[in-house]
Length: 287
Image 1 (spheres, rainbow, N blue to C red):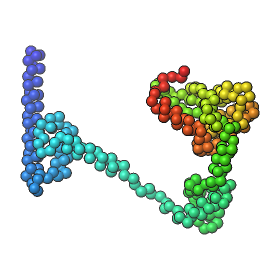
Image 2: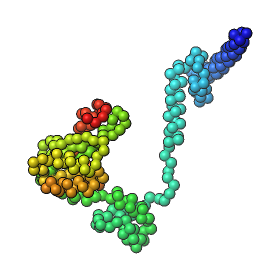
Image 3: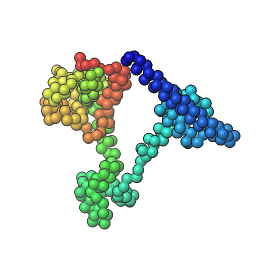
Image 4: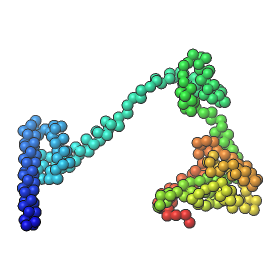
């Protein structure tokens, strides 16, 4: 009895399914016939025709069998074009609503005051501009101070220091390596400037100042320390690392903030290590 009921229900559903498919095919053929009637001198497809077939492709599995006027690849191209248009519209950059940009002559005045008074901060510049009759917020002045052209003299002095003391300079730095288990390894190395020779290398998961001090002792044994050691202002160094560097009779030289070019030898070696090795393998774990 149950088998007979299941068979009857299945027959009814199949009947309705077949009628639905027939109705969809008739609708598709009528739509294409209407497009074929618009010959100027060839069938002209309007936006409604494209939208019809894009929706048919989305909701009707058998849309390809009833398609005659164009190829299925053309319908896929319409869909992709609509996708790009949709994201272009919602990603369109809108003009920010706020205060107008300050005039060019005021920006040049800020740049001039920064160049002639390098010790002045944004509050002092803000007060001076107010006395000159320019009503500009202190935050705006601070933002434009960061864009002011810098004096090239300190850069030339740093390059002269690197050239004149190349044989007596070493550098240290860290770089990160992602592992297979989505953890991070920290590679530490010390490199000489004159021969670009790696003096010491080690890997750890938890770099601390004590660990770095021990690496420096291993890098410079038997009074083989250089005269200068260049490193950046990473928080991992703390106060212990510069003190340990001085105890080794080495002068610590820290780079400026956001100035990786001042430690260019170490940065260049990291780039070579990534390009030649790390970009081709996935680290599993620390050795």
